Amino acid sequence: MSFWKAEQLLSLATLSASRLSGVALDDVVERFSVSKRTAQRMLRALENQFPDTNVRVDPDGRKRWRLEAAAMRDLISVTPEELVALDVAIALLTRSGSPVEAEDLKKLLEKILALVPRGKAVRLETDHYALLEAMGLAARPGPRTIVDRNIAAAIAEAIKACRVLDISYQARDEQEPRQRRIMPLGVLAGFRRYVVGRPVEEPTGPLRHYLVENIHMASVSNEAFARDAKFDLKTHAARAFGVFQNDEEYGEVVWRFAPAAAERARGFEFHPDQRFEQQPDGSLIVSFQAAGHLEMCWHLYAWGDQVEVLAPEALRTFVEGYRRSDFPSLP
Image (tube, rainbow, N blue to C red):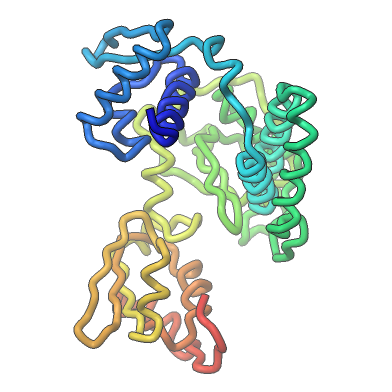
């Protein structure tokens, strides 16, 4: 067996041990980007090399392979690159105003390091800090919103437990905060964070978005609520360019990037459902369905005069007159 195949087999064994339900053939195809025939060979090798592999058929009729974690204990190792990936995730969560999730990841990192044998830990720590320093992770400046940790913890607990959240909230058009009782369904995280939910008094009404930095106080009540089975946060988030939702703005968005910016624009995912159309003159048209004109303007401004809004007309009018030609570089 070649080194590469052995490495793949160990990765597959780790994957099958990490999932309570085991892995199916399609999971292997997706995870390792291989054909179904290759995935079948890999799973046969898993059974041959690890006799403790449990093979069963799930309720959907799919065959699943699961390896007990004990069989992998002496084979699993942690790399400096994996530790740095966790550090990056912690830093990004912290900067995006997610202190509770960042703290949870820190605890996970500590648990992982506690399980590493002492002899390996010394070498691992040296390489870990060297990589961390090389990336300059701790020294990166930049604006970010500040979120009260107690408020963030209350929001997370209410969502997890399906409990009504009591908040003191000040909307943009209000002079003072006032008490509200909401049923939180999720959090949209970006430059700003919004709690997605409904007021208790309107359980079947439209979804509302509460800016986390405008919540002055939050506490979890003892009152439970039934989560909307039809609500999907990922689908809901895809309706916006950023995190702000506005049903009145939702629709087709079309931008044209100049030939000088086309290649750079191809390197961006502006929206999960975006479509690229290369034009004969070298320009690039990007289109998608979304709302959030203000957040689009913030981003479009960084491209100077290298991008033109073709649709909608409201967005085109919004950015007109703010397309600068003197920016020395592109985003």
